[in-house]
Length: 538
Image 1 (cartoon, one colour):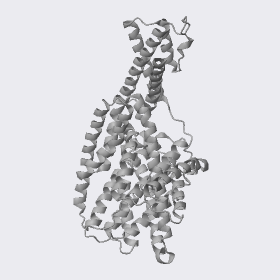
Image 2: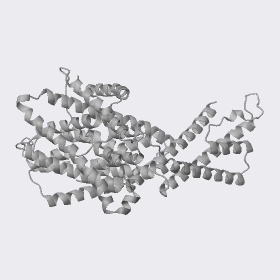
Image 3: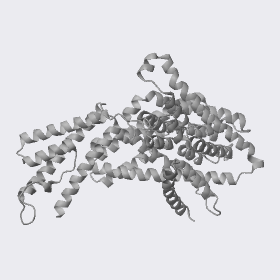
Image 4: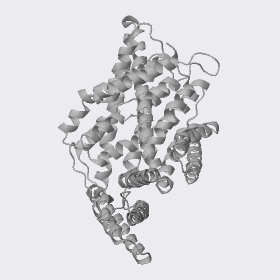
């Protein structure tokens, strides 16, 4: 079986496992890993050997870009302190703790290799936790914290990983130089991301065809990642920055049809890449297990168990003090932003490793700059796979019952913000309709119907209007009324959309509320376009 054929087969298997995961109520990544393990036991099944650079280029940029596009910058700003502690502080602390323990318990593992291992297993992949949290109705802020952590910890982990790999390959490391390089790499990545993000927004103003606009969006993460890496900056941070810029400005320039198409397109792409990552993880783990000898590798398995425990305990030991110490030191913060221990416990436990760690492990170089084998590469791979597997099983499987046990499920979301926004949008649409009535001589039936449409947001069937019909079933009066109504609909929808964007820009509503409102308006506008097309064909 050729490599491409195998990849396509794995994608089909991943699609087939999705309904099973839903049926047995087990996180999808866990089912994929188990499926990959089972596949690895099939005799003669070839391995999927991917070049390290290809691994990063195929998986990292598109997944990060879509995560940034669907993240609310406002919610990130509001939760910047806890997200920073999780995405930067916890990642660095975990990397350091794992490096210290690995250097101590794994014989012959140098510090550089130990830090590579620490960087590989430092970032949690909260995809499974986010899916469970949303499905059970966990409070939106907890979901925001997980999304923000997943988005931003990639930057910290990948930059740390690149620096650790460089030290392992070259054999030299300077803490002061590493700190300066960290700042330069991050600053360069942000600069490239800002340039690419604004360039995308400018191009989208002229891309009228949805296929063209979405093609530009699909190419953007690579357009940000590759130049940043060529310049020695952080490609990951460039992708995230470009995505956040696009998320902020694209609602004003992208057409409704493009947005609706993009949701389906990116959803499929995310499913394919995520499914492939986890099923490859299971296959890699299966091959590692098959190659193990208990007599020879039992000590390494014990060391992997110790480091897995360090990863889990470090997160728990970090999250609780970070949540409570600032509130003990600042009573005003405790009153303004109280926390429940149940929510803190959920965040502390939701630390499963996954796609990020696998991509870094697969991208590990095989040799140093001198051509010698990379020190402890086999141990790094085995321990990384063990950490991913143990966290997925030990933390992922009990996550759903844990959420229910902690009383975090079924939270009623306060829809006041969205209700207020929809009321203001309807008022803006009605005001614009009144203005049009004053400036133009409009058919009263169309105006009254549209006024009801704005108020109730129900679908209107103009055929019910009491108008005399000619031989073709449509009189000229009806045609004129139909054209008037559709023109008014388009005008009002434009004003409502502009009002929604203005409310987001003025920080009155979140990006998530804007996306929900825009989706409704986009569907309305798409209906108008399809009705116009049907009328022209008729």
